[in-house]
Length: 311
Image (cartoon, rainbow, N blue to C red):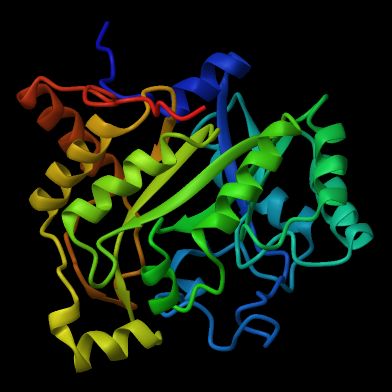
């Protein structure tokens, strides 16, 4: 049987549940402290949330309706599967605890939903919320996905992220201590970051107690401040070709902790919103190229990983 050369999150989930698991994205109508003035205005320079929302995922619909429509969308492909409710858009822990509880519990009440995945920022998670989610996690699948994006504070400032890498470290450690699964997002190719810096990202996050990692290539999306910067200062950007990015990802995986499961290598913005880079590849096509290239290079996740000697 063919074996992946990296830890594939989809296979990890299948082993845990003994059946196929599908995430259903939800837009619960959240905002972000980096948009409403608490931390900043305008949001992160790269962010246009409409770039990754499926059609059924609209905030005017209830949580239940979005999940039921999402399940209907995927059901014809796989008759027997379970679902995770994925609170995806903006900052999904940004609100009063009682309000958050109502949303999460509504999602968990939908038939065949076996857990929740909550996308958020590392500066928007309270101890009370972690205690609550820790109780839920004793019976249901619960993961918090943190947008780290970069381990370099200079980059985080440049993209108007509104938090530091140290904030992410604290939040992730607190979450893991509560026995809640933790995920992380990282963008490769952010402005002014060298390949050396991106390899340092791999080393840094390898020391965090994260369960999964999503990698994304930098995409320049219409309607963002970064799109304006891309036009005004193209010298700030080093956008990769698909082949260059494949080798970058594999170099990254070689340095990465071999116990971290990989959930995604690329993101896909709608063609009408995407300025660059336009590779014309679907996610499954890109994964196949990663698999093939890793075989050609005879390498694997963690090949060059060196655990920290810090105590």
